[in-house]
Length: 593
Image 1 (cartoon, helix red, strand yellow):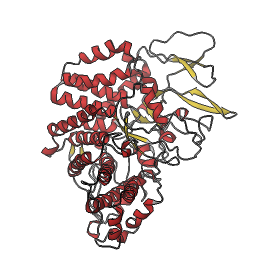
Image 2 (cartoon, one colour):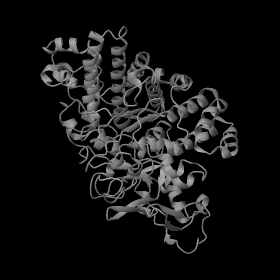
Image 3 (cartoon, one colour):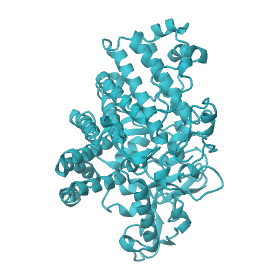
Image 4 (tube, helix red, strand yellow):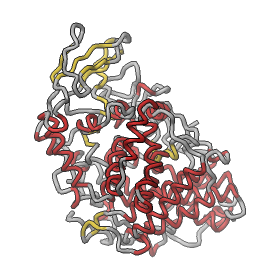
């Protein structure tokens, strides 16, 4: 059963020391005795650590603000209404966010909820260290490792969305109520150290009862997250003085890539996680809410059945309630892949049709809807589908499907990238082949896996292939933007994407053989749309029984709306005005905001 973010029972005891600001701001309070009981008792301590997850599901936190808006627009993913100027929504995606943004400028926004989670984690970490004897008690040790990891998750997302942020690694007291931003390098180093400790406390997937579900952290996730943070810390990013790598020698490429490579190898060699044999099967299981650990999903943000908006926001669009859900009208489809992405896939790549979907579910007749072709400029992420769910969603606002925060495929691709940097393309080849072997059917491996990868004989060629493989593997998961930033490819690749879109519209260059007319008919189920003309070269009229649709609509304004400002000068969101105003003048915005 999915963990609920609105906890009752045991957790009600632990909120004794979360409930009052006055309690949190004084070192010695009535809650001291309560903490000693809570954090020396595994069941009570678990309730407190579970409470760290509550901010994920709050209305304006991850659920309704951070996950729906962070990560767009890049060279593979865009907000489908980027041209809109009637509200503040596209500003968050087109590198034009303002401190008073209407979606974000609220006191209960994701920024505040992330720090709420951090404060809860700080209280748990302090209590477990003081009263839990975590090195001797495995159960309490696991809870300490889980608290350290959850705190790292909140900070990881703060850093990728805002850059330098206040560093809070101890519970708030009166002297630390207002503090300025810290250099992010300090935070990255603390998180990397914390996760090293957590890895000694947290078991592998399925090693204990606590790690049988992907809604609880495990050693594979801890190590994978540590690798992700090491690469981010050593990568390019915007600092107040420009886009560069860190100047801290501890965060050098040599140090951080070696750390990340070792962590990824540790996960791979443990044999405790695995790629799903089928890419489509992976995403079907995700939508079916299979939560068993030891598969490809390493950790998921756990949303209760009535919270969370992953399908609500990103699924193939459904214009009305129908046979697949009652989640409301016009659900899904807020964002999607850029149209050229479909045509950059090899036609034999099994990831293509799972990732890029050119249709929606149209109006209903007696509660039944059929798939309906979209305009050429609007695609949806097929990784998220109401029609693949086993649970029928009846909420008007939420679908309750978790956010898959990290999967084993990322560990493999990080291993390839770091092996290439440290040891060269031959060392990276084995990992790149692992992903491509899953992407292509066995009959195609000789050409699409072995010959393709073996031809990558230089470090630069292997790196370029890894950047492309990342696109094919992760489009729709909102990981691309941070990867492009750390590779120093954000604006470069977005501009290349714009050029590709113009060539695709004109059917020129590498897109000269893309058809301009699609032919459709319905399968025997009267729901599934059969499409001829999506593949290159499918230009012949298939005959009677097919409906022809011109498929060329892609305007200059749609293409150019992918960004308004130079993305490399707006890699981060501004701190929202409400937090500036309530910071006692300790917080300021950089980057021209």
